[in-house]
Image (cartoon, rainbow, N blue to C red; front, side, top):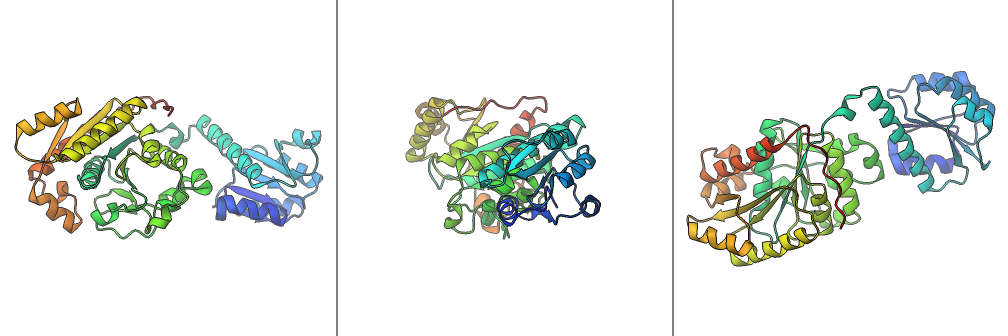
Length: 385
């Protein structure tokens, strides 16, 4: 696959382009326009951007541009001149890349070319550009051990039953995430391969990092070791979730305990947040603090679910917890043996033991989220922290 074609580039330009986009960069040696065109026609994917390098003369660039201007969104030339010659502009070359271009210059040109290609595709009615944005559902908890991953995997499984192969479960506990283990998966690729400059420009690289569960759920697993989380920024996570939301019906995010920068970035993209606590007082007080922070930052979306997990059959205890939280518990998931057994088998309880009381409550939560989805809803405005 080629998104960028370099015609007659010098070694530096080709090296920098490959650093950004890897094997999406195709290099073609300089030559007569007919020979270059013949090689372009052999490509399996037509490029979004062609850059004429320093080994291509202005006359060759002009002749090629006149032929390609109607079929390639962006044409650029590497030049030592401060401005483009008028004859090259007239031929359809729109960008000049300095001969001494830094990585940032090339990256900026790639971004511009991608945006232009997307605009042209949308004007032509490209299906992916016209899709409604899928839901982003973020599952949080102030501390570990409250069953947050159990909630996330089961809700994602319910949604996947509604939208087979169109729901992604993202493990955002980057250091110690165990979504893959909870689903008895052995992923070959993980989330660290779905972020970065190349993945940000090409959804296929993100899709390549997904692992398919037998239920039809798609999983983006946490790094295989804690060191794999190094260098993954909150901004990259936000961009990743946007990419997935524009391609899939729902994206469920299992976060690390507490409010890390990555979790806050995910909540900024969320259409729904599920806040999980267990009945013990430390979890409840932790959730109080978490909700206070999110309220102060104005990060809680209208669709906010407070889940009391591992609950006992004591209505009085539920009322006490609601008084401490200062808000109602929207869903109560009972403690049952079936949940533990299903977790040990790596099968979500909603699939393993459908008639279990906890299974029924988790299906209710998942279906409520599915029913809340409105194809006509507008994207949530970006909040500022």
